[in-house]
Image (cartoon, rainbow, N blue to C red; front, side, top):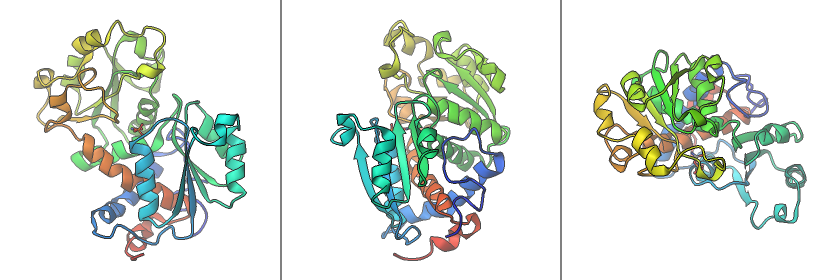
Length: 324
Ligand code: CP
C-alpha cells in the first residue's frame, strides 16, 4: 500500500466529514461497494490489511460501532486489540494521549477512538503518527455513522443528490446529526431538522438546513426520515417535559407515517428507545432500513481502513479478491 488516504487525498486520519469534499465522500462510498460482498461469503476474510495492528479505544459504551469496526478489521486480516476505559489504566488517571503513546510504543498502525469529549479524536490525531479514526467524539462528529447512512440512502434511491432528508429528535446533543448534515449537504441532499425548540441548536439554519416544527410536516416533506435517539444520558437541563410527552408530540408512529410518500424510508443510528422517539411497528416495519444501515457499517468501515492504510479506491475490487 502507498501513502495514507492517497487515492482520495483523505490524509492520515478520519476525524469528521466537515473537512471532506463531495468527491472524497462519494469516493469512500464507492470504495465500500466491493467490500459489501466479503461479509456475504462463507469465509469472510481477505488479506487486505495483513500485518497491520489496529487498536479500538472505546471510552464510551458502544455496540454497533465497536463490533462493526472489529468485524471490518478482522475480515481484512488486521490484528486487533480492544481497550475500554474500564479495566485499563485510564481508571488510574492516565490521559488519552499517554495511553495512545504507550500503545504506539508497542508498534501499532491505527487507532479507532470513541470518546465522550468533543474534539478528542482530532486532539489525538494531532499528537500521534498512527492513523486515527473517529468512532464518535462527544457532540462533535461520528463520520463512519454518517457514511453508512449515506450509503444506505444511496442504495435505496440510486443517488443522494436532491433527496429530502429530515433528521428528527435531539439534534443539539447529536454527533450523528452533525456528521450527517455535513455529508448530506456536500452530496447535494436537501436537509431539514425537526424537534423540540430546546433540542435544535441556535443558528442551525446558517448551515443551509431548514427547521420544521412539526413531525407531521417532516413526514410529508421528506424522502428520508432520520430518527434520532433521545440522549437521556446527556440531558441534565430538562430539555423535554417527559418521555411520554415527547412521544405524543414527536414520536414516529405508523399512524403518522400515513402522511408519507410511498417511498419514504426510516433510518435510526441506534440504540433505539422504542416507544419514545420511534414506535416498534415503525422500527420493524417495511419502511425501516435500520438493519441494512448496520450491515453497511461493516463495508464502510472496511473502506475507511483500506483507504487510510494507503489503498487505492480503484483497486478495492481487486484487493478484496484475494483469499486470506
Ligand atoms: N450508532 C452507534 O454509534 O451505535 P453504538 O453506540 O452502539 O456504537
